[in-house]
Image (cartoon, rainbow, N blue to C red; front, top):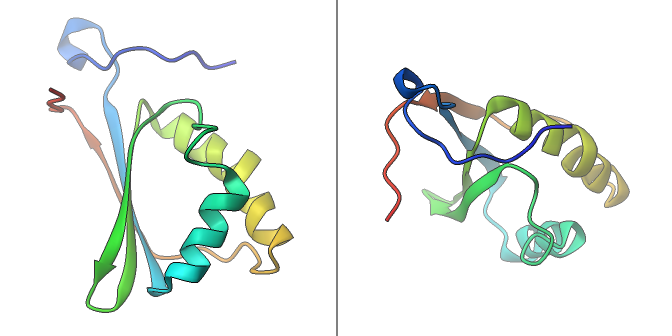
Length: 108
């Protein structure tokens, strides 16, 4: 089982934060809200999630997440997101994702 840990610079023996920007289709507050409610995201925070934000850019839904590691993000997809999308009848097709390690992360 993965354990959460504070992100500190990898040159100090820490992990490197992992950032994902998922570009869903046309922004629809009803659809986004249904997914968030089904995941109970606002109360049942995924293990390893540091930050979640969503909004609209040029009519498309953008979801930005910052994770303690890529493994946490992939675990969330596998164990929670994919089953939830299937349960809602939206399948498990992947939206375009921009992802990268962030060796420099500032949190107030």
